[in-house]
Each structure stands twice: as C-alpha cells, then as structure tokens.
Amino acid sequence: MFNLQSVLAKREIYFHEDDYCQQELLPREALAFADAEIKKIGEFANAHRAPDGAGWTDVYVRQKPPVTFRTIGMTKENFGTIISPHLPPFDLVYTGYSSYRERCRKAAAWGTSQHNALFADWDDEGIIRMSGLSSSTQMKNLSSPQAKLSQPSACCTHSSTSIGLGAILAS
Image 1 (cartoon, rainbow, N blue to C red):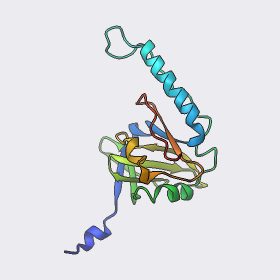
Image 2: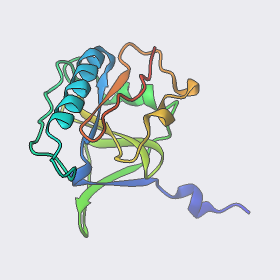
Image 3: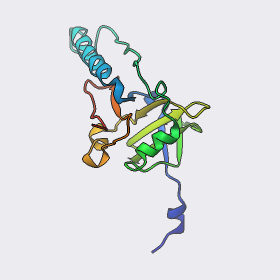
Image 4: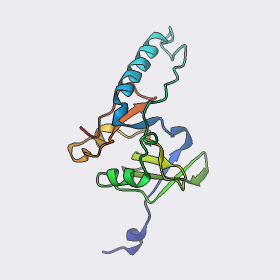
C-alpha cells in the first residue's frame, strides 16, 4: 500500500560533536602524507604503550595534511555531484551532545544508514572546510567497485582512531 507520509519523510542524521573528523576524508593528493602519518601513529603507539598494557604513556597529535578539499577549492556542489551517485544524501544534518541537538545548516551527509555516512561542511563561499566519515563507517563499504570515482580529486582517509589507511575511492 502507498504511504504518502513515508514518501515525504526527510532523511535525518545526527553526529555527536566528539565524533567530528575522527575519520577525516582527504583529497587523493594527500595519500602519501596519510600513509606516512598512519605509520608514525603506529610507531608512536608501539613506543609509548603503557608497561601494564593498559593505555599509553604519551599522546600523539596528528599533523595537519598538506592538501585538503579546501586548499583545492572543492565546492559543496562538486563534492555532492561526486558522492551522490554512490551514496544517497540525507536531507537534514544535526549535531550536539547529551540531550542537546542543533541543525547544521552548512553541512551535508550521504550514506546508507546513521552508522555508514560521509559528512562535509563548508564556509560562506561554499568551499568544503572539512569532510569525514561517521565513527562506525567502514571504508570498504565506500570503496566497492560500484563506488569507484573517476573525478580528479577522490579521497583517502586520515584517521586518528585507527592504524590503517582506508581504501582509495578513485584509482
């Protein structure tokens, strides 16, 4: 049976403010940097593991990438055009903490579920400032043969939460 309410329902997604850019998406041009940084993070983690094995004795602050979507001038329209054929867009994006929620008016998200999404936000000129994945998104889901992108600036991940480089979305 046809349900008009379900047809008109907006897809909404929420991310906790602590999850912002825990997994950052970078242009393909930053791949060598991301590979090197992930290696440094792994070496640092091994060198600073607590003697009892519960945690670490120091904190590694990851370096800023040399190339971002902002530095190459990627617009929200171009970003959406590249991603939308592979992941459906969400209509509304919210963030917050605890019971507080706020709509993100300069952010968009694409994905198959609340836990498998790509986010991007932009400045007043519509240039992408930051892009990332929801904290539980697996890059393998975004890098299937069907999701291969041929646009000039595809992506690699730069994650502070994992010691592994996600798949490249373009070859």
